[in-house]
Length: 144
Image 1 (cartoon, rainbow, N blue to C red):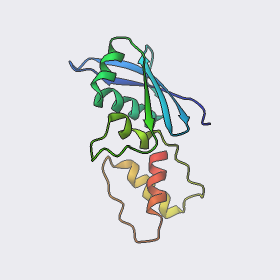
Image 2: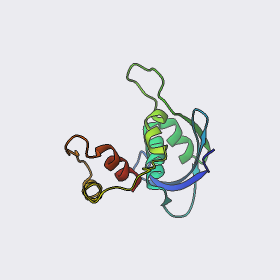
Image 3: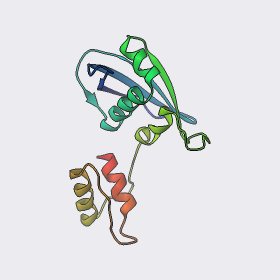
């Protein structure tokens, strides 16, 4: 079982006011259990989990309102999305952000250059030739 991870993120409310949300995530058999509640303090923790907190609070209005009003929300994020004919719940859209990314082999220098290039751009397409490790570079960028 994966250890519990913690992060704090500033989330925008509907009127533009920000509020700090602290989240805890732990891996279970078929997904992740996420607990979110309003907090005081500073933004910090795993950047990917912080992004997941922000998405959960903004994409699902019920979650955002509950936390803004001081209640704790527990969400289950399935490992694989349900067959929903293209309509996904907000919790299913954050699953890629919760997955731990580990590249087993070290990257080559040209792959590290590709990861650095990806990190400098908000939106990018990696167009290397076949067999040069685009997947490893993308995972390296997500893990950074």
